[in-house]
Length: 394
Image (cartoon, rainbow, N blue to C red; front, side):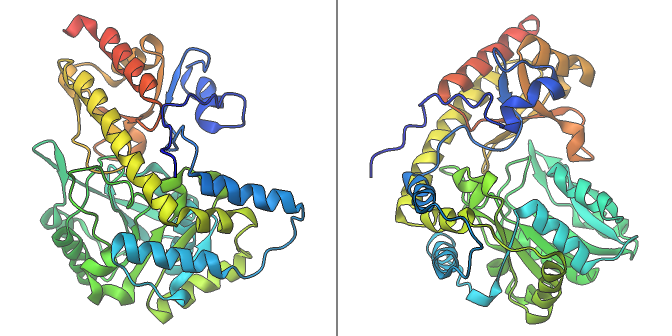
């Protein structure tokens, strides 16, 4: 297999791409001279095997209803075993239209209107949106900040519980902070869920995107095997291989009773995979895909080093140390600026579209999130633009 060329420029403007085509409307950053660093997808093509799978379907030319796809299920099991040491049974795997959809299914399956769903904030913004849309309440448990990284604070969280909470959604690895939670932290989370009788939904979509030298990702199901009767694990190839447009994810549920409740909601909503997605995933979850991911993580680590060095050299700015994901979480509080000012400098002076911290919940006010999964030349350009936009501080 030839080495992937992550430096290859790919123009996504005008392709129906949210990340590039929507940023002017949302951020006022024009795509002709702006840099899109908000939506969490990559500006890289997936492994060639994925393209071949799509071309094979297109060459056949028939796009009817898909049937059972054993290769898809087998590839998921192979990937989880070889990459994460997790032996998954075929009947544990339930497919959804992506992990945001899976989150919505879980909320519907395991809670009722008016129930509270627990989030460790700041955290991925779609969780709160889904919970509110379903008529449930968000219970925010703020993560503690120690030595520049997030820590779980169970003592404070125990005191905050009201008894109306029915579910906890865990983001592992953490988005936007980039933490790889340890096995001990995952066991403590499981204990917390037992104490408060919560279903634990572990969103592990970033589990393959662990940077070199960082702690190894622990699968919650392996770290806390005695919580199987209340554990739903969400994962997908879409984040790993930049195929989010396939809208395909999985809920892996070992407990039969818990799995049946999820299956019932899938059946009630008529949800099943499309034609292209399963073959794309089967092609990605392969030795060729594994080699591609290994090369990707080395490249992303290089991007991280360049970006962090530039940002951390600006007085008052600090990028949270990144262990996983390709999402830099940058704190501007040291500048003494109001949020409107530092945001304007990023968007108007540097012409960069980045996610606003408050959308991630409590603790996000002084932050912006930057997507580093783009060509290195663009990361270098963004780093220079940020230094120029805050040049008066240096």
